[in-house]
Image (cartoon, rainbow, N blue to C red; front, side):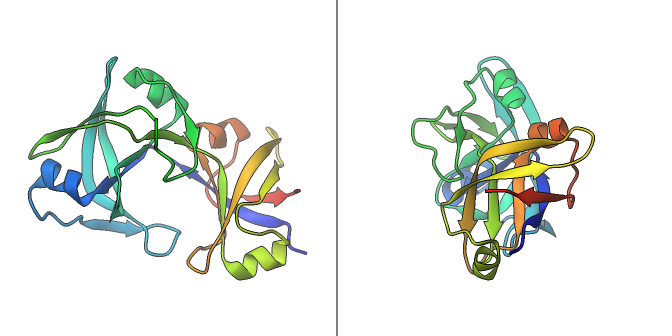
Length: 190
């Protein structure tokens, strides 16, 4: 049975709905792909926006495409504190009851009522990877990181789909605390 998989660090970013994209960049605006990301169909965009909270502003936050049904901010705990919002760890897409903030783009600004999350650590797996690792969609596993700052990440959500590529995602703060960089191998220990 397979046990090792690559890890990737996720920096702050925003997923926008088309409605909010239209307000920030102009009616009918289409995102400009800068580069593909590791997950099929996902990409970093040239476009950036500013996030304004009650205590501060984070300038130049990259947008990831394609557009989504709802706007979602994926920030670190430190980012949330600097904006003046309570950091809430959630799975991607689970934004109900989370804090919001103002977004400022080149053509306008929009107040987002909810959508700021600290993304829960998770693993993307293709269906064949799930079989090789002996796990299923929505399983919770532990991941061991070796090295000088080795540790165990508990409560890691497994997401299995035909459209995913094998990779664990943690936010930049967790990755730095573990002393890992993009592409390092970690071990699934269930």
